Amino acid sequence: MLIRASWSKSPERRERLLARLLRIIAYHQANIADARESHAKKRKEQLRTRGVAPETCISCCQKVAL
Figure 1 (tube, helix red, strand yellow):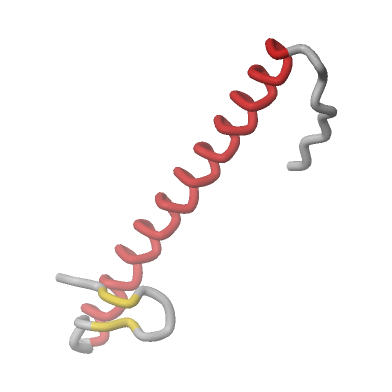
Figure 2: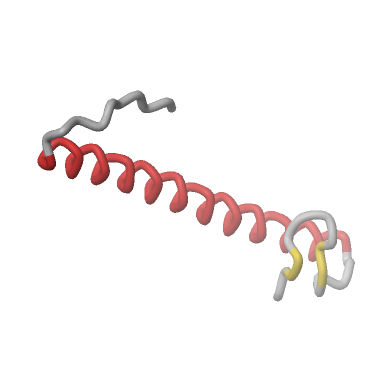
């Protein structure tokens, strides 16, 4: 999503634009955190079903604990 905005001379408008930008950043950070958590759970289950020691998942997760 692209945001195009010109910083107006109005402090109220600047404040609204900044608040909107911060909400978008928070939304995407939450999505990234959820995706990492979901991936770690799936990876842990994959390792468990293969009988592999799940201490490390070098390719993506750093550490996957049981």
